[in-house]
Image (cartoon, rainbow, N blue to C red; front, side, top):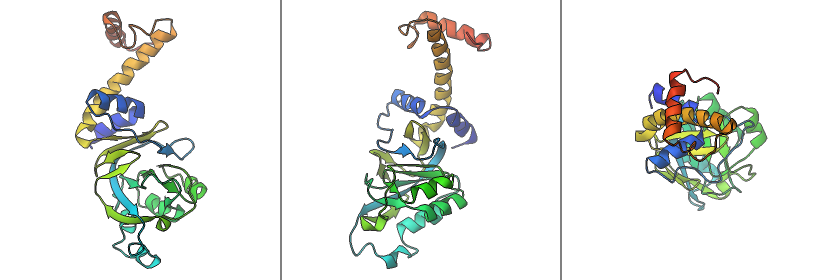
Length: 237
């Protein structure tokens, strides 16, 4: 993702991104049940680094192998690229935590952009006090090893019902989390900025008494009025 694309995505909402992806034929993009955990929500625009959990099995999970350098969870904590967002397949289990405050602190110190998961977070108040950007299913006391086994990093995962491919662009705000295929990110950023500019115009028209029909979506007259508004320097109506 180049800087121009990132700057554009920083300006537009998750709702706008979902509409742009819908127009481009990509419908399944918004994560269900993955909520902002900071107050207020802390915006994320970053490429995805992924971690996949599978169901617990005794030979796959123990206190001993938790500290192994080959443990996928520990690899993710140390290998997620600075500026990327760690996206964890928590199997949709809101009753099991995928991370707690110590590992969250490590991600923060390493310059990771945030955490996205459809699982729970333990020590949630401590995690929130760190200021680290988090989106998840909520608080959960039990540690991951009571029900999850760390399986793989940097593979395609499911999170909140959405496929996430390593390098996909994640946009998160108070409306939740949306996943943009990398090859569409520049187009979504460009067209999304234009969409929000028109929507500002349309909302001003409606606030002055214009009917929704013919304003949003625009008829020919509204389109002409919009172009004139742009030419005039986008003044308040």
